[in-house]
Length: 400
Image (cartoon, rainbow, N blue to C red; front, top):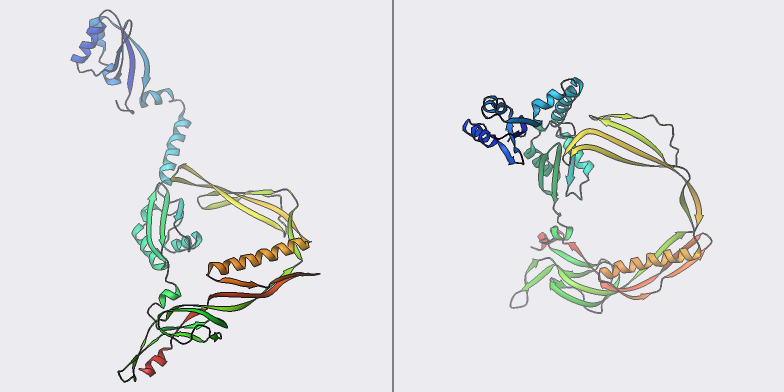
């Protein structure tokens, strides 16, 4: 039975109740939920069929008791005096239908390099914003435009559910400088003054050997391959991308200053809250009896209303909390300064270790004075000392 049809639940009693049921079947009267009880039967039928029961009741002399009435007709009859309620229901339904024609929420996921605000700004240039009609959206065009504007976006999916526009993004990694130089002839040069301790050459021609002392900028491995004739005369030079693992001993001067004073933020009063109502992209800020001072933090959060997880409404309420504070000057203790300096030095050494650098000797000392302190000293290290530099195309052409 349809949920929007009008039907009657009734009870039939009498000696001929079984005959009554058979006559209903013979006359095409559909009975549903037919169940027997102590004195007769319970059943449900449509209102149209119920109006046809009078001749059958006279013939069988049964009694029919109406237990319940269901359906839109009975509902409106019971509430026919509540015209304002009915008008409100109709108006509310029309408003919900009308609001469902627009986009009231834009969600972006999968982005890391490009912020939500940046992508939303680009969408506005395409006339895509909260409050725009869903019928005006061209999802394939949105996807194509975003891929054109942002080169690191390799995949975009735009979909509409309810009143929400969902933008899903997948970003790709651009090639690093070293990857861009994959096919460019280059040399390996020294990053700093060092003494070479080991060399493993894969491509190119070594310009130095183990045990040599080099200065920053010296060529360690040339991106050249010399080809000789049988009489040991130079036939030609092929240029390649020099590749080698070159380790060396070198020293780094470490220095870092620390001030003994710092500014501390101290919250001084109660939090004050401002409220802003938003409706259909219009804002109404409620009167505030608080004036934020110079030193005051502002924290804002927004609550959007929705009927379902994807059916957002053009209503929102935004709260702004004002938290006053004062900045007070304080001093570090000697122990705190030593801990800070030791922690920074340890973090620096940990980063070197992650890069494959071995710490041979650490002569950094932490000194304190009236104004604060500083850490300085020499670090003796052993690690990779080569860096890649492209070969000048002019010199290659001149040799050829």
